[in-house]
Image 1 (cartoon, rainbow, N blue to C red):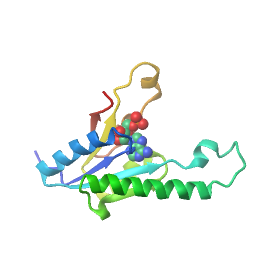
Image 2: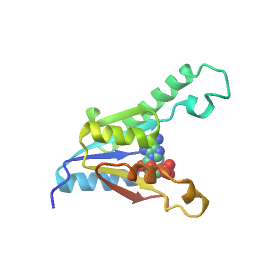
Image 3: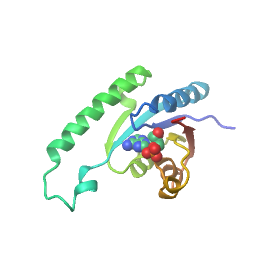
Image 4: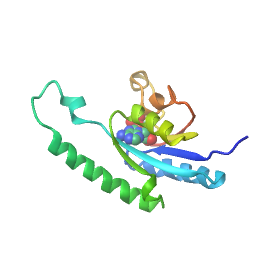
Length: 144
Ligand code: AMP
């Protein structure tokens, strides 16, 4: 079986992200692959756009800056290069797929909470990433 050469891990920067990183780092090491990390910020206008007539750009910039700093800390902790860190604005599934294709990733690593009941019906980011991905997807069980 061919080795993975470029891996993209997606993190929401919650405490579960360390588990996702540990698994992704181990696979990257075993395959001698390059590891990229993405964190997606959802635009405030997605949530409040039509309902509240407000300019969100200042708050959005602030959230972006904080996310960049948080991802920097996270990446330094796990030894990831500056050019392998990506903070993107949009919908997580869409942006994860887009970056994976742009980078030519052959594996995407995400966390999965193993939902059941109503939460399962409503779907998850891991499900969304799996459907429509053009490469392998590994869902690391988190939150146990
Ligand atoms: P969720 O379905 O929201 O519980 O998220 C499960 C996994 O999806 C997380 O562990 C991450 O791997 C990924 N994920 C969720 N939200 C984001 C985000 N905003 N940016 C990047 N990855 C995310």
